Image 1 (cartoon, rainbow, N blue to C red):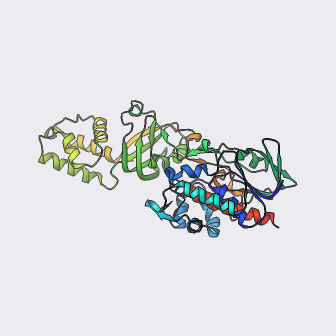
Image 2 (cartoon, rainbow, N blue to C red; image 1 turned 60 degrees about the vertical axis):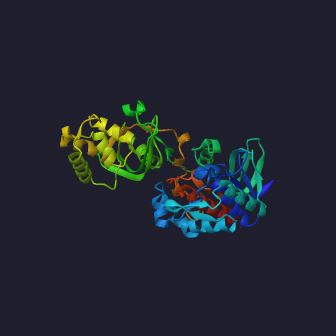
Image 3 (cartoon, one colour; image 1 turned 30 degrees about the vertical axis):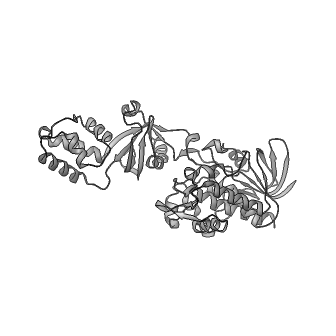
Length: 421
């Protein structure tokens, strides 16, 4: 059996690539080793599917810290507004939520997956599931076809590799594509977890003192070896039995990974009240202490600061202040020490959960070896890459899926154009 284009991988980028190739005409085959297509889409955005983000292009790129600038060329051909129009054309109207995130009006990831499957059917794209690919075959500097694990050979003029990275392996992303890329001469940059929970060996973490405690809208920072913040993210976070998680921690994680290459432990700092100045907080508490000198410090702080009581008690303990201390007996120096912890509670972190537990894979096929407006290999004719196998990674919030859909669109379209020459 011979095809013009074979797309390997039925995630967001592969589905989009197969549709884009199908639109150009010719014979297109979409292969996936799993039992159903769109598994990663179905679980994205908490099952609601955050299909893109409506921020302006420059802001989008800032939210893709891993080689986001490479996508400027791709976005000039097909961008987030085009993604919105694409889904609306398929009968999936989208709505905008906080921070520019776009969701289907149905609030169902399945409506997105079903619309893509209907479009594949309309375009007469052949689909094979339960079909693991063993290898991509090359001949005289060009793609020749793919060999399946069964030994069956499928001839193809062009192959789009859309098999994802190594994160979320239960959806089928188990790193299969890296060897195929290396065989074609491509460089695979070092793989590392991003958007992943962070591990700490601090005693308060080990004792699970704060386990399950969420802090809302905090500023979480990663400090470098010179004690300067390398990044700060203002979002929610949660303490876990092994460290920290939640949106702020996930966004900081790739910077922790990079910093841990230089040192065995990395300092992180929580500013629990980013809109407040330290001196203002101090004056407010001192004023409340003067007004109610017989009340305990715990009661006064609870009435003047809007933070979870459990965190307040923890910071009192860190400042070696008994929560039952009567306000009139507490020195201003002690209060200053305590207030400083609201703004700068620092602790050490020592690692992250493994790549398999990450939401996104950092590293992959070097973007220097890929044409930015076509997603074509610069080293092998007829070979195209899209999605997470590329060395591109963004924050959660619709940025990775935008990169996947845009690169998928260009890879599928150009693979078909090349095959039809």
